[in-house]
Amino acid sequence: GTPNLYRLKTTVYVNGELTETDEQFVGARELTFSHDEGLAINGHPVKLKGVCIHHDAGCLGSAVPRQVWYRRIKHLKEMGCNAIRTSHNPQASDLYDICDELGLVVIDEAFDEWEYPKKKWVKGWNVGTPTYDGNYDYFKEWGETDLKDMILRDRNHPSVIMWSIGNEVDYPNDPYSHPILDSIRISQPVYGGWLPGNPQAEQLSSLSRKLVDVVHRYDPTRPATAGLAGVAMSNHTDYPFNLDVCGYNYTESLYEKDHATYPERILYGSENSQDPQAWNVVRDSKYVFGQFIWTGIDYLGESGQWPSRGFYTGMLDFGGFLKTNGLYRQAMWSEKPVVNLTTAPLTGAHRRGAPLPGWNYKEGARIVVTCMGNTPYARLTLNGVEVGQPKAIDKDRYSTSWSIPYQKGTLTVEGLNEAKEVCCSSAVTTAGVPVRLTALPDVRVIEKERGVSQIELDVTDSQGVLVPSAKNEITCRIAGPVRLLGLENSNNADMSDYRDNRQCVYHGRLIAYIQATGQKGKATITFSSPSLKSTSIELDIN
Picture 1 (cartoon, one colour):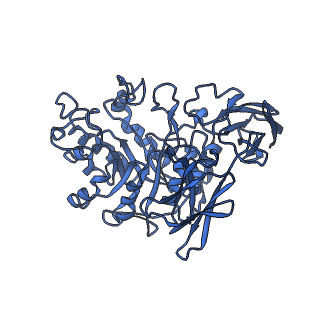
Picture 2 (tube, one colour):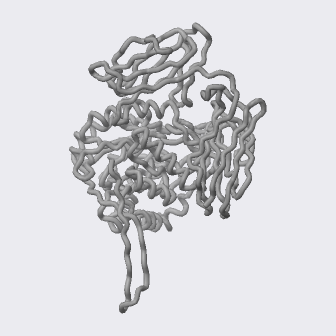
Picture 3 (cartoon, helix red, strand yellow):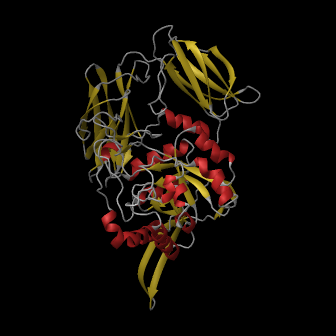
């Protein structure tokens, strides 16, 4: 809540002569992990409301400017997120700097596989015949060195609270196996029962011990953790007992049982589904100190079959825009009163992973309006007239809904406190025909050395309302000492070139990334499309 940082200046003198100077930001905080009480930061109990993120940013690939990460992490924090898991590898130093500044805590993760490879799906996610390409063949020689280097690089970041030595390396039969697989039920998919010809799970004991020793050697102030996928199998090895803190991936059903069986074990959800029940278990269990949702942001990779660019169940899309399931997560995690809307025809369901909803339907059609919120009650109005009487919001589902006939205008949901007074609201408005382009840059002044402006571009009607159905092709032209890094429309199925100056909007919008080229001056960025009024943005490069 108050992420204060302090500048530490270190000077080294040899025989009275200055030989070296270093400056860095530091932060002061105290971490307490308890098997019964969970996590406390500076003496205050904290529930981690976390997300797993990858290191890419849509059309920018892995070369992500700091400003892009800042906007994304800021949006996640506004959603109620307070923790990041770097799945499943160390990330650019910019990310940790931003988390230091904004006050999010970080699980820094080193590996996704150890001495053996996992299945790699090339035809489509979990489809076809896998390959086994990976970085496992470097692990024996470089694994301990890479872990050491990650710790030495990142240990001065106050945001980092745990070191993760691996993700799902104990996935049942991918590759490790154990005789217990013939007799127990695992929540993760299992590729058959015990496979005696596979590497045996007991090998995880010695490997994890070596890695945990590296963590303790180079940073005795933070615990070693890992994301366990086959915890029911791994419990028959030393692997979870070697860890200081145990992360459970998609195995919330084992929290209560394992807490009773292994009362000294410190537990949290290292990777979890978006089902509200997965959060409610954390909310209601004092000893489970958090969860990390898969996933915080849409990412390239783990694609479905063509055409598919990547995995798109994030709270933010490829362009860093908040999606409907981000609004739903906000209802669970926000400390402030919040209500948000989704709408769908009575005959169809609205996916929470979809972009934000509009309010355009056939006149008189029956529409289901769902309020996602954390207030005691909610009320629905259309053009200022009540069309949905106050209803209690389900405290475990974080929602309530109404069925109303469609009428154009402005649909508003109001969050009501216990006295049924309005304490928050949100609205959607019927969009007219596309008329113009509206551009909103995050900054209008950028540094000449690789400074970046992120320009959100909307197709709007004559009143400035976003038109979600718009699919117009946009042309971007630039003049001045800047270059276009890419146009990202967040459409997972759009396989066109994202690095040229033409792109179709998706659900009425896209984002343009503009970067300075090293010279001072002024730049003009113009967006145009046939039949739409164009718009221009001027940037100062200093």
